[in-house]
Length: 471
Image 1 (cartoon, helix red, strand yellow):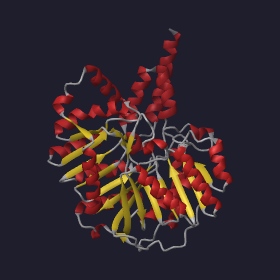
Image 2 (cartoon, rainbow, N blue to C red):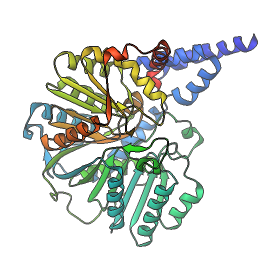
Image 3 (cartoon, rainbow, N blue to C red):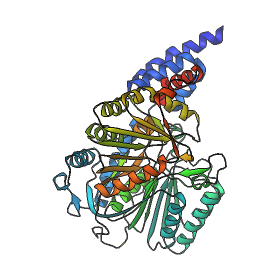
Image 4 (cartoon, rainbow, N blue to C red):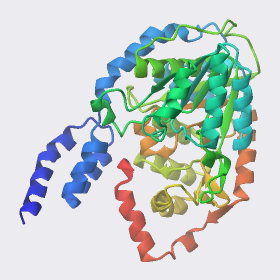
């Protein structure tokens, strides 16, 4: 009896704290209140660990890092593309919005390869690292100390011993398995290593809710990689439970590389307090292709939720087709409405989602949104070949985005993410061609069949939907 009473006393004490948390999403507040009420002790513990928004005290530091490192961005005269210079009004509107949200302009003269084979991605990364002459900047959410991770470590050790300046930034939770010995061998070779989040203090270690989910490599300030793939054996089909791994990554040359380096510099300063003034001796405005690209950094430390705003605007601006591929689909209410409204007004909306995940309960969670989307005319496909981890969005065949951002509250509202918007029909055609190939390995979800699922499946889906803002 006393345990019951004490549990609800704790609940009453926590309710004001929940309500006072700075959030833009009131659904998350309601979800936490329900979790604490339904699970008095467990809910309280989960809220204290995951629910408290501790990013506010970091905003000043992040803004200071941008101010101090602003000189590393290419000057506006270096192949910056203005909204008036792009071909379609949709591209111009999204370019302008993204610039106002991030401060990053679109640049011309880029060469971008879209890669849908994780083994080819790894091969290109290793080739770039092996030929590095000046610097390597590497930033990852997950770095596993397995065969793939050890191979990459040895390659970095070799380049550091050859005189290349190597810096590695990893997420303190996503790369939790990295042991002292693994990191010591890097440091002994001269590699500079730092944890992005959690930070060095005990207080920072409680910031489990705020992850650096970015995947960025910049080599000699000339070649960069970003996308959805982390470092580990599972990303190359070596996990027997997950099997084949489907991901999308980018290899980039041109002015957009300087913008990705800027993101790394800000994150490095945030983690270590150190400014990185050294740059490779080459012209940042050197044209290496003919593609227009716009780098998009997103995180919970700005005045707006960048990726949520950009995706919402892009979906609402679509007139012909929307193709979305994501490994985690737990949309916010505005994004769900945007997808349904687009389909109802005649836009062809196609979603490619996983049928198998490392966290299989997330597949159950995503199905809670299927009924309304299907009734609105959205096409939904579930990938069957193996683990689907790609994160791409293409609008009307002229604007595309590839990066680390999933279509869920965690990526859109809480994580630090990075992506690249690609303007023009050519990259859109490549992504749409990949999408069609992936559909051959996918099962289409039909409304009539979906409505016949059992009550246990419905109960599981709707129970997880209640917790969607905090998944």
